[in-house]
Image (cartoon, rainbow, N blue to C red):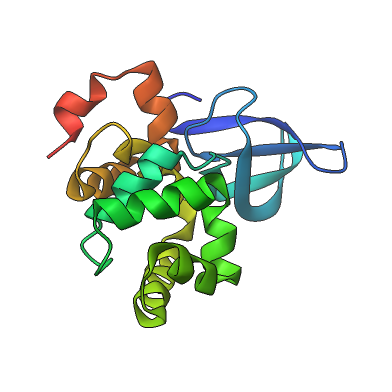
Length: 172
């Protein structure tokens, strides 16, 4: 990927190869989910013209705890309850909050209303949650994390791994 644009060949679940191109930031061998439309490029043939991409990042427990504790819309979840949730679910949190929010309520001793509010916000931001929780693990505030993900998308994690000084100019 260069300057927020990538093109290449992707091996998909059935082991076939798919050509793609579009605005995103990925590195070779990154797990990625692409969204777009099929088109026929006169030089490269049939390819997916990418309109959106998200990295297949795993949710880090420390990042999840910090993200939950510092998100202004998550009422009733402070550091202690966020830690309980992160320890219990970590990389399974997305699946659990989506399909079994009652388990989150039980672990954190939260009301179902509070957990449903978390669920609604989580689902609303589903494509960016992994990047946001990853950045939160580094001690960035919710505002800083949101600004970075909004500006650079899910590729921000990889961008910062390659150029951490990007934070100096990009974090408000």
